[in-house]
Image (cartoon, rainbow, N blue to C red; front, top):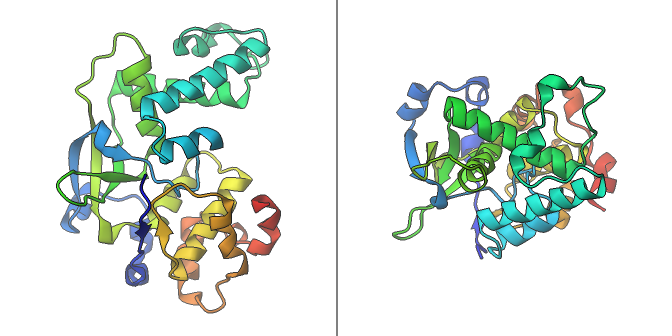
Length: 276
């Protein structure tokens, strides 16, 4: 189990710009010490404090406490989806069965899936896209190697990570070399702002995920150490007493990371019920 803490270099936050938070050209990133590599999938791990959770809480805690391998975590998730599907009279054996025949179904006729079924279905759709079109958008990973064993923590792209595992271990007929394309970032250049920018650029964050996102950015600019282990809501609750009155220089960066909308940043006191 990883129990260390991640010390955020807040001096880097002073140089956060719109260019850094927007679309990033690979050539520009490589000039900053970043590089694109194909990395063995087993050496890559999701960020345990990533506000956008892919895994349900129970599976998240077991996986990040290293009680489950990636394949075991997915199998647990699939079994949960299968149970929900059976309860609703639509059992499935293969994850591909979740795709159904969308061409023959209107939006009104499509079954209303449980959250577990919908999650697995979305991952299967992404896996099929990766299988057919290749991994067009590499993961962004932070090099957190200690000692001789290479290790990488995902900064952006966790859904692509899980879709790749799903494709490799649960979709028949796929042959993989076990590698995944990654944009590798030195540990000292990791950025929760870049992570937040991608989170808000993708499909909408839930209220809980948005509360975690705002809390993580506030904790970062107030120089809190960020753990490298699974967290519960108590970790994010620390931000309830924080604000930007004495950190005004980071206001623009936080607004940009949350979508350039002033309404995106609300007093964390109004989200306290989220963490109870």
